[in-house]
Amino acid sequence: MKFFPTEALTHAPISAVLDLVKEHDLLPDQIEKVQIRSLARAADILSDPSKYDPHTKETADHSLPYVIAAAIVDRQVTPAQFEMAKIMDPKIRTQLHKVEVVADPEIEKVFPALQRVIVNIATRDGRTFEKQLDYPKGDPRNPLTDAEIEEKFSALAEGVLSDNAQTKLKDAIWNLEKVGSVSKLMALMKADVKKKPARAKARPSAEKKRR
Image (cartoon, rainbow, N blue to C red; front, side, top):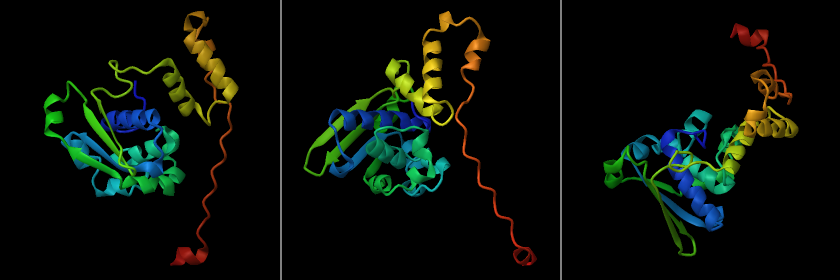
C-alpha cells in the first residue's frame, strides 16, 4: 500500500526522514544538511538540476529534494503538498538545497531484494542522526498501522467528503462484515463537499484576435 503520492524510489527516503524528524523533533531551521544514499537512478533521475527547482506537480512528485523538503517542513507528504501554493512555499523551497543525493554502489548490489536507503541529517549545532531503511513504509515488510491508513484516507478524502461522511465510511470499512450490501457501502462514498467552481477564462478581445 503506497503511503505517499510520489515516485516509488522516493518512498524509503521520505519514510526515513519522517522517522528522524519526528523522533528527534527536528525543526527546519535546525537542519544543516540531509544526505540520502540511494540507487544511481535516484541520484540521476530524481535529483537532477530541474528537481531542485520544481514548478509543476509532475516535477515535484518526482523530485527527491522537494519531497524531502516537504517532509521536513510539514512532517507529511500527501496530495496537499503538491498544490502550487506548497510547491512555491518559501519555507519548503529553503530546504531544497540542503538535500544531497548520493549514488551508493553497495545499495545497488542488494536491489531489488532490498529497497535500502541510508539517510543522514546534520544539524546546525553539530549533531548527526542516521537511519537505514530496507523497505519503505507501506511495504508488506514495513506495513502501515491502522492509524497511518486512516491518515492516508483522510488526506485523500479531504475536499471530497465531509468529516462526518469520512467517519461513517471509515467505520463501515473497518466493520465490513456488518455491511449488508455493496450498494450501502458505495452510497457512503458519495461526495458531499461542493467544489468551488473554476473561474472562466477571459475571452481574448477582438483587438488581440486580430493580432
